[in-house]
Structure formats: structure tokens, C-alpha cells
Length: 180
Image (cartoon, rainbow, N blue to C red; front, side, top):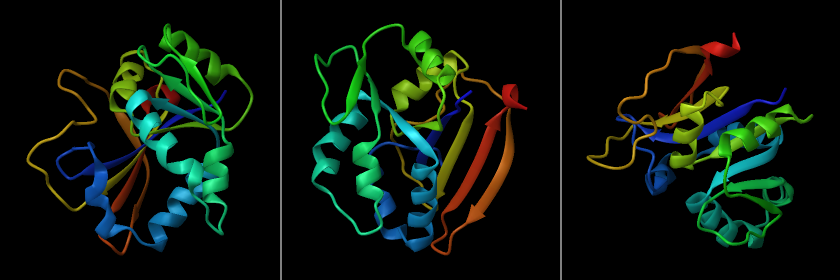
């Protein structure tokens, strides 16, 4: 069974929104981490806002390492009640989100990766469909912004791995208890 993996940039106080604050900390170590993560997946699952931002930026990007080619070629599953159509190698999920994601998990293949998409992640948390969290925690605190884990959510996670990057960013990799 495929795993649904949440990959998220977070501040120390849990803010995930508009991660422009990550730029000063980006380095080759983080780039390699993100490269390995993308290449161990064979599909992206995105909410509307993240999809629209990515679809506006990624199709014109290129790089020698092949990250852009991989990003552009992967199938994307976009969860939105408001979009009428999607492009960029994408398929639209308009309703029955938990059922559709459960079906995707049953298909053969590699991991399904979620970038950003806080509302989608919250929906999947409610339906116990997240298998792993890969949280890149940045040494910055923002006074306000959307949080990954919303009030009222309770869960127990098991730490699988940590990695500290020279820029001060820490990768925390957690598995949900149901996957032990």
C-alpha cells in the first residue's frame, strides 16, 4: 500500500503559511533532502491554493538535476470544490476526498507526496489518511499565520528520524501510530 506523506515547511511556532521566510535558510543539504523526497514519490496530492501556485510557476522551470522535470511529469491529484478544470498533468478530486485518497493509496506505486495544502492535510488528518509527516522546522517565529495542526486535533506520532542542516533548519520525520 502506498503511503501519503506530508512535506511541510514550518516555523518554530507551527506557522506554515506563505513560506517566503524559508529562502534565507535554503542550502544544498535541504535541496538534496527535497530531491530525494520527490524522487521517492510518484504522485502529488495538492489542495487548490498550492496547486494554483505550483501550476503557475513549475511548468516553465528547468534545472540540470532533473527536479523540475520530475515535478512537471508526476501525476497530480488536486482537491478542490471550486475549480472547474485542472492542467499540468493533473486530475481533479471534487468530492468524496477521503474515499478518493483511500483508493489512491490502494494503487501500486511509490509514495504520494503532499506539499503545503493545509486545508487538505487537515481533512486527511480527520480521516486518518496521513501516514508520515516530514516537517522542516525553520529557526524563526512568526506572530501569526495558518498552523499545520489545528486546535482540537489530537494524535500521537512516532519519531522516525531527524536531520539538522547547517542553516539551522531541522527535519523531523514522524510516522502515525496506526502505521507501526
